[in-house]
Length: 207
Image (tube, rainbow, N blue to C red):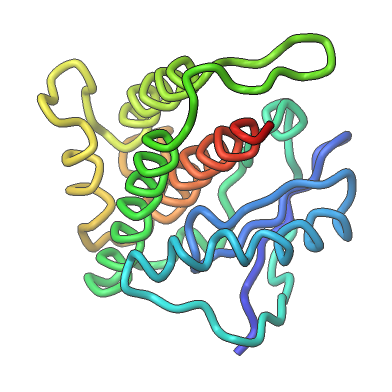
């Protein structure tokens, strides 16, 4: 069975995201490069899926089922537009599956951070955050994401548990709050952000 992919086209950057595998999203300069990057990162995403009790198919055939127009956030470096397919009804089984992938993404970040040095390799001009600042950025972003799914971050003692409570619940597929995100898109965006920075830390830990 082919992997269903949504392609989000910005003016300078394109994202390819596997719709049924939250967290497996990569970018490129054009659609071909984004799809190639998605396939290349399957080897890194596969252990995340395994951790969630799921298994990627041995044969990875990608099928672009939807294309959406990106925006400034896309070009800045984040998949910003929900696919029409992410407004489908979410069953209890599907909700549990996506929640497990989000939790596996967090666990993957935790493991990578535990083995990473505090000071990460910098870019050619000396730019880039160190390990703890990357983690702080991920946590702060989740506070903003929580608002998009109807949570008040400041009122939650355990925000990640509250996020899983929302993403792990069945849904009619609509926005979780007026002007907010659908459950499927929220899972994709949150898991992508966690893994993108987990892999950044991993890559920049190398000499």
